[in-house]
Image 1 (cartoon, rainbow, N blue to C red):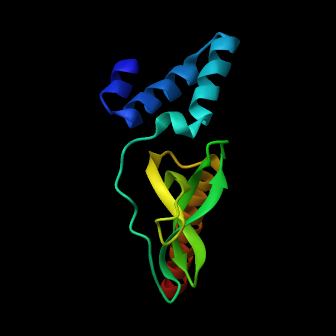
Image 2 (tube, rainbow, N blue to C red):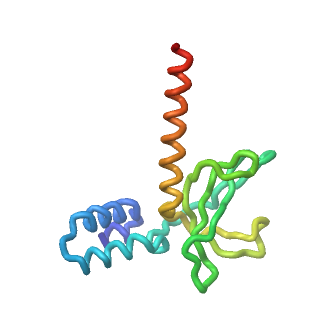
Length: 141
């Protein structure tokens, strides 16, 4: 796993640790692996600043303040927005305050989505699928 991390293949390393934690029989080792997985900062990958845009409330914006640290960094989630309201989580970013940025934030890299955003994404996609199937069934009748 360390070789994957140093090669910049964080997603593969994280997936490997998820599999390892799932199959781990030693409770102490499993707890250590799960703690490593929960700390999203450990999985930061270099990435370009996300394209934050909004036209009359439709676009993408950063929301949230997950796992804040004393150094001023935290994890924010990039959301697709409608009328300025977050609708669908897209990605997680490690951010810090910045006086130079118009938003007051600077992204340091991409991280996995926080658990609540992953759950929200699954629920939103599932609701959209159910709604589409219901609409098609209604049109077919």
